[in-house]
Length: 187
Image 1 (cartoon, rainbow, N blue to C red):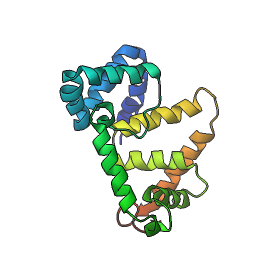
Image 2: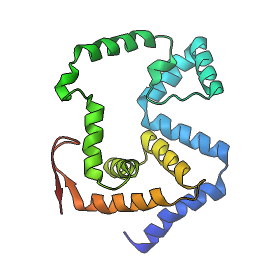
Image 3: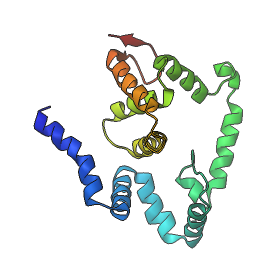
């Protein structure tokens, strides 16, 4: 990449901050999220736009300030009870002994911790996921904001150092096979 292109990319952060305020940033993020998520578009157009109960439930969640981590758009509607019951039934049908008593997400976490070594796992996963997607996604926006929230207000640079180490490590690791299924080659 030429120096001019790098400088232009670096200036995009400055332009975002200098030329916008919270409202224009929120509108830009909403538009970007709608472009990237067909589930969000469907929820806005169909469920939120046509159902006063859904709008009321959403307003209550926003007002309460409660965490909505791990949920999805079905949880914002009145018809999520059936989905949750089916998920519970399917989880009960799968033997936990399949993975030595652990669920798949716990196995994946152990694999990622091993790959990350002494690098902070969150910094490693952020760098790896962003490199894999190659672009800003809703998950990367959220995770990136969480990352910066841990660094900037406190002034602690530990996570930035770990992010730098994660990027260096990821340059040397070439994944083999699918996302978690297999070995990694060190260059």
